[in-house]
Length: 240
Image: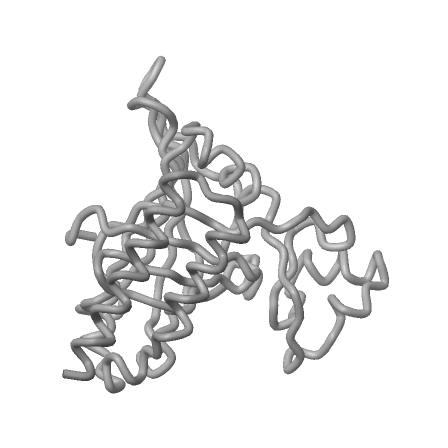
């Protein structure tokens, strides 16, 4: 009976969260509902360390319903990682601004800030300018495990795809990923595919990140990225 009760409470909390997002409640109200949902969830307890069960729960195509906001930090224009690491160009900016927080040891933790591209996309999410979808496939052969992001432009105009190889840490419910493919696929006014001019292989750790599993269930998934943004996804299709 107790597990069923927990699921019922979680389902109710998930509905409360989605209702708050749908009526465009303020950020504090949504944050409170996110906290209520995630504080009662523990991925290890929910799945008992069963990697297949975690992968199955995360599998599918998810639509982004909400993302937390972070202010632009001029000392870290490419965004700041919560673990205080500064790979690649991020380290160059940290050195340029002599940012003690950005140069902290990797064992430290701090507040994160999102990248300028992420902020630009998410700022349009509530305006209906973009639809953001994420396909998660963590089962099967290792080389086929992927996390795909698609930023869809308006009504059939095309999308920007940002794709990454992925690995699941089942105990923590964390997806570790590394970007390796990106392009813009336009459908209107002409059909054309434009490669994204970023040499992912040369970026090393700068092209890597992670997504925690703060909650998954009742068709809702809440996760937090390595730059501190919390995302609320809604299941759209069980096919990734």
